[in-house]
Length: 285
Image 1: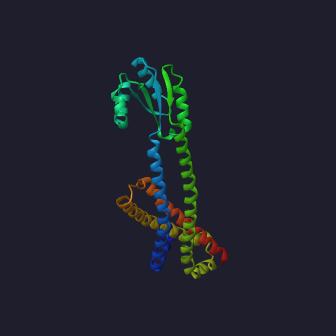
Image 2: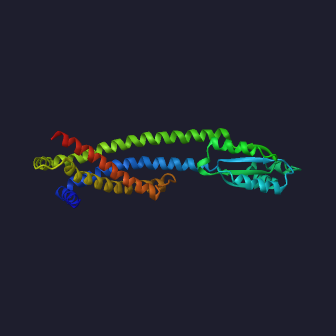
């Protein structure tokens, strides 16, 4: 193992310009992938913000005792899909309507009785904010005798589901395409280093070195270049994010786990690119 590390270090020292060019090429290839990743993260963040509004509202029959509502709310909170339950009284519903619907202030002022019913607002856990889960919770709520009606905005939740599915599919397909292009570019870059040392490889073959022995330093070199390129690409991505966030729109950046995964992905892509290039060269000598 120490021999592999020493050979890799020698490769960096023997051709510093080529190594720097390789790292730079890898960095910009991963930077393009990182920009797409930022777009994907922000689309998911936006969809997540919209999905937070997904809730199931059960309107209560007038005269339902508060004790019954309180006990039912505790039972509903035990549903596996439910995050929280809020009891909105008739007075609170009217106050909210007066606050949010200012264009109807004249109508509200002329009211002799409150026409708005009390309700239970049921918020769902993040992984259950979809049409199927909302419909299942709504069906169970209709089973309570004191519930007069249940609403959850089925049409717009179904549209949100379609948007989420489309964004996921596009993310996978386009992300995979960018990753393949990055592997090709990185493989071509690493192949330049392999060709530069083709005479050395031929001599090692003549003295009986195995393909695995010849391949290992190049694989480590590709891994290191991929990791370095990933770090540089992460820095460039942060610079792009900072400019967009400051001058265009509010944006979100990668989480720490996503950033580490991105750098690790750079190492894996560098390793794959090196594996392909070295394997091709060994087959030809």
